[in-house]
Amino acid sequence: MWLLAVIDETTRECLGIEVSRSFTAQDVMGVLQYLFAVRGSPRRIRSRPTLRVGTRGSEFVAKTVRRWPEPSDVKTLFIAKGSPWENGYIESAGGKLRDGLLNQELFLSMQEARWVIDHWRLDYNHHRIHSALDYQTPAAYAADCVLPASATPQPPEPSRVT
Picture 1 (tube, rainbow, N blue to C red):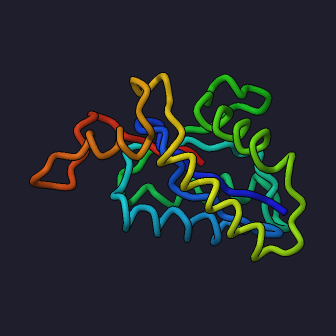
Picture 2 (picture 1 turned 90 degrees about the vertical axis):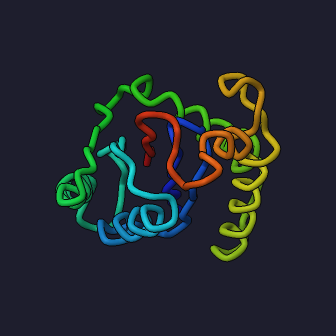
């Protein structure tokens, strides 16, 4: 079982966690396209090119995902192999997911894993406070970032992490 987690670096929201037996470049781009449609396009996407996805390998996915957002002016940033400190937000969320859920659960099906993991994501966004967000939940902080008359984020450069 593989997980594709997308975290907003500004709000620390876990925007999605996809669960699959493998991911292709098209799968990754489909998730990003959906999130762009729902949340708007970010200025940057930071990701690990070392993800093991599909049968064509991480290099294929990294190159495809790197080229894909160019027409929309979304920049890509990649974390160097063996440099998790370059992306503390996803490492922190991943550690909480591992410690609080994955190390304690035995999933009997992909459907069960998707359901349980999505419920964990909702709890993470709506009930877990973060000291970096002035002890607010990610969802509450994100709501404060949106102007009442529009859907325009106030922080100058929101970005998402995969």
